[in-house]
Amino acid sequence: MLRSLNSTRKELVALRAVFLRSQAVRRGANYGVRALSHTCNLQAASSTLNVKPILSRPQVISTWGYNFARAYADLPDHIRVALPALSPTMERGSIVSWEKKEGDKLNEGDLLCEIETDKATMGFETPEEGYLAKILIPGGTKDVPIGKLVCIIVSEASHVAAFADFKDDAPAAAPAAAAAPPPPPPAAAPAPAAAPPPPPPVAAPAPPAAAPAGSPPPQSGGRVYASPMAKRLAENKQMRLQGKGSGVFGSLKSGDLAAAQPAKPTPAPAPAKPAAGASFKDIPLTTMRSVIAKRLLESKQNLPHYYVTVECTVDKLMKLRAKVNKKYEKEGARVSINDFIIKAMATACRKVPEANSAWMGTFIREYSDVDVSVAVSTDKGLITPIIFSADRKGVLEISKNVKELAGKARDNKLQPHEFQGGTISVSNLGMFGVNQFCAVINPPQSCILAIGTTTKKLVVDPDSPNGFKETNVITVTLSADHRVVDGAVAAVWLKHFRDFMEDPQTMIL
Image (cartoon, rainbow, N blue to C red; front, side, top):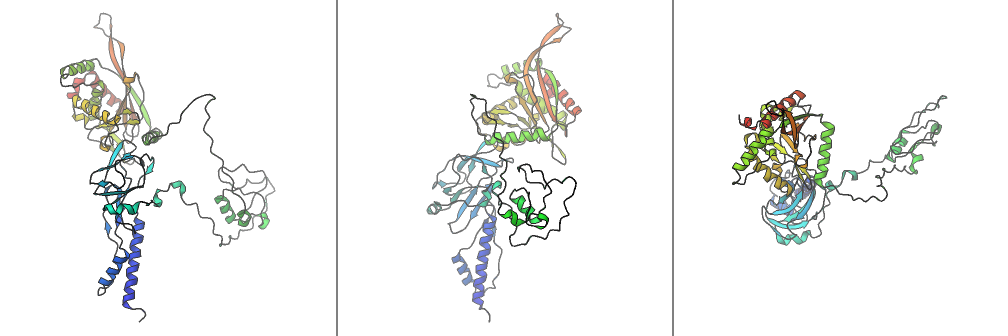
């Protein structure tokens, strides 16, 4: 007998424990895997003496919402809470504040902390009862990547002390720039024998080998020969090949470059200095401002914008608005011209559904519902709460929804479902006295309508004693994505919109 049956079983149990622990480490914060301790392994070994040993696969526990994962190691049982993605476009977040302190009791649904996303500040709740053992990302920390470990939750209050010195050593949080440098060429491997280079040409010398960016311009001279290993080493060290080496015909070898210092990269150009005596201040970017800049830049670079402008006479609309406000004054309702604009946009989309569409890369998606995104300016940036099914709502209901959503937006209390999505957008700068402007499309939408202020204009009127009359006019500009909406389609959509604005009672027909 080479080995006893008992010793073989113990080795199998130990191998299984190592396998389970390696699986738990490899899965990280995405799954919870229960690893058996050394004591449990011994008990399992003693209880299975009469059973054929089997190397079973580790049992994977279902994932928690918000990237919660249960971890088992030398520490007590605990839950590793990672920063979740609270919106589809969220890549990083900021921990505004913690509502609980280390050691506090947590009940299911308690507000754990507030997280600033790319659109709003949202509350983050705990999914089950326990105790907050460790806060790894303090309040006020900005640009925390998705999946970064933020805190530890334990089931018993007595386990909190075990995590007093706990530190997150997960490699996933390392930035991309800190990735391992490219491996150097193997020193033990000999350099491949380079074919004898041809003699230098008698004519004008060929240009030297290309060097990494940032290297100084080469000096004029003959052709530089180098072995493949020397070329690779020069590229890794950002060095320029020049001069003669110890190889055949003066070619450079890897040994000639081993002791050489890498060329210093050209420093990035310094920002332009302000004029002498000019005062300034640098404002750090918020998460919302960074996302706005990124998305709008992508929109202008990738979407073929074009613009169509019309003037709408709104005399009848203003009379109807005054009549509605007077009738519902006791109920506290007060509609604005912007409420009629939203209704007219939604009704025009019912007439021309091509404008209520989105470019999806390989196909065009035409929406059945008209969800109007209304641009609202806040102290942190622009956000677009949505009036859902605006084509099925009256002006009074639209007015009520706009006031509620605008208040939430300015208080930074919007929920994700209240600003994510939308099928068409509107931006109104008329209250600032702007006559006309062109708005940037909010992808993946295809259209956005820019509204100017109400101005007075003289128009020909044969029925007037003077031959003309004064009218109230609004200039609107539709920005459209030419991949989805052709110019003729945009013109037809604006025709319907102008008809509804000039005679608002036709919107109910």
